[in-house]
Amino acid sequence: MYDAVSDPYCYPGTTVLRNLVDIRDQATLDRYEAEVTAVRAEQPVPSGKLDHVHYSAFHRHLFQDVYDWAGHYRTVRIAKGGSAFCYPEYIEQQMVRLFASLQADDHFRRCSREDFASSAAHFLAELNSIHPFREGNGRTQLAFLTHLAEVSGHPLHLKRLDPAAVMAAMISSFLGDERQLRDLIDALL
Image 1: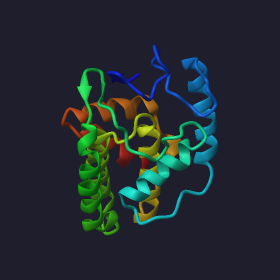
Image 2: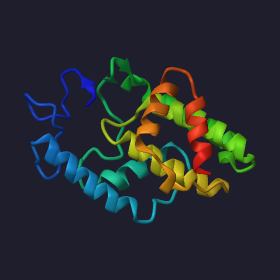
Image 3: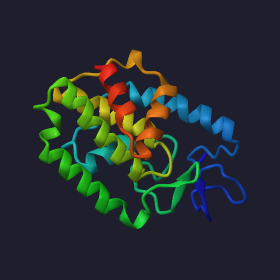
Image 4: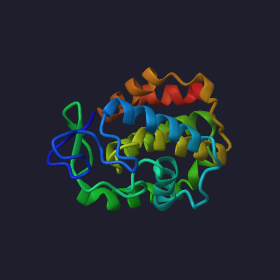
């Protein structure tokens, strides 16, 4: 769970996020969220320009059945494991910067396999450090990366995905070491 102070996203006196079906038990909400986002993940992805607006559309698509703020940047400061993510007042600016860089790199279309793994790892590490949404960042990152990889000609084989390895690689990249993440992406190619 994320650390957040005075969180208007949660039901008063709890850490359970306000949701469209008014589930107030965290375990029940986790199950519901996992079920409905899994169904949405199997549907066609939103169309767009692989920019920050398109990225928000991915979040909206996945979480539209759970949260009324799906697709909108968070307005509170959050941290995980004592590490703070981008402050909300800078999210828009950092998302525009990151996705402008992605566009300047032609969405990694001209990359070799090795360069794609390295570039995608750096992009994902930066995106994770921004953590634009109150919840659902990891699933949105994976959905977007999968689409980006497909568009760039480097499709991912998600059956090889090990969630524990992804978490370890993301934590390592947050601390400045992108090697695990690069190797993980390379193994999915």
